Length: 243
Image 1 (cartoon, one colour):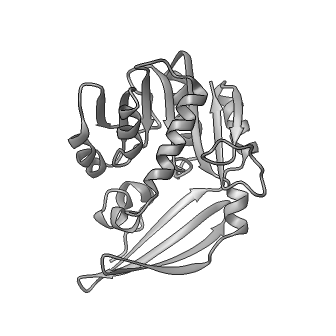
Image 2 (spheres, helix red, strand yellow):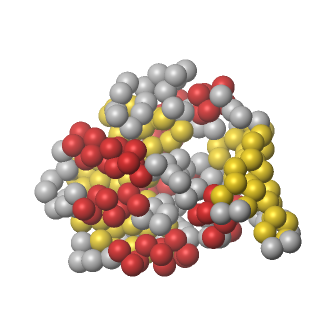
């Protein structure tokens, strides 16, 4: 069976297989990033944060533990259903399309772990940044944590296999028409599956053009989760602070 729809993320992110494949993501690294980022932004005590495309809520939960009032939103109903077990008076999760403004404003809006550039419609990239802008209060900061496309393309592993929970995930990667495409194939219970991850290879200059169109101002750029200076050739991440 092949799952290869126009909005690939709507189907792939909502499967258990997605969460199995990526179950070993580095939580410690994510926590270090949140510590550094919240300190850099100097968010107010009890400040409000919108975690945009929050997945199963790992960043949201940790930020809430730091004392912030956090709302996590994601298009995946399964991810939000999972995250809701962590809810409390200052932590909430909701299914929401990040192309559209949320109904509140926040001290910060975070879009983390390359949760951008998925859209088939190019206009949705700009709409997302405009939505972030509308969800920031007068003192608020927007943050997009994206891959450094130049670095990723330069170090692209064309194919490999990762075995998790007895499933052999065969992955092939290629760059086509400005998109980094990962094809993931595997067999489970004698049924074949294929999913594609397709992310626009945005560079800093691409984001700067989107920011200008959206009327937001780029304040700072970092190249890793320790908030070190961005280098287009050597940095693994592209972390942008704007308002």
